[in-house]
Length: 194
Image (tube, rainbow, N blue to C red):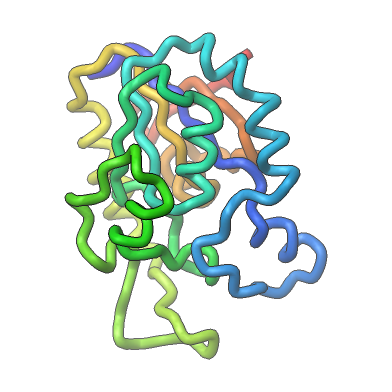
């Protein structure tokens, strides 16, 4: 089990920016970071690098990958897993297939991902995609927690998403928040890394 676990929410995405302005899902599928998101990542880079992690784990959603690369560069090995992807409730949470991700991020390995690694179901909402039920998310949170706690690395950074982390920790993170997480009996407790 890692001694140090750092949870990091991605920087602001183009979806976050548009949704904050209008309250309407802009349908930015697999939304990238916004200009502010890139600046948030740049502002958090020194703190992230000071953590001296042995492994960076990122969600396959573009905003998380861009955040992970921007924060850590090549300072630690980086792996991609869909276990901690965001709860699919908006267009930005619909992913891209591994071939497209490999073309966009050639330094990362996506070969282990299925063609559709995000939540999918025949029932669609009026926007044209399946909304992930909370019960599916909570099951995924439990699976991810077990997977994470079994890692052999001493210090691990997890770059992921707001709703997923809220279900894991009980806390809603701001964009580019870095939290030290210590798993407890009821999902864990955390403190902001400084």
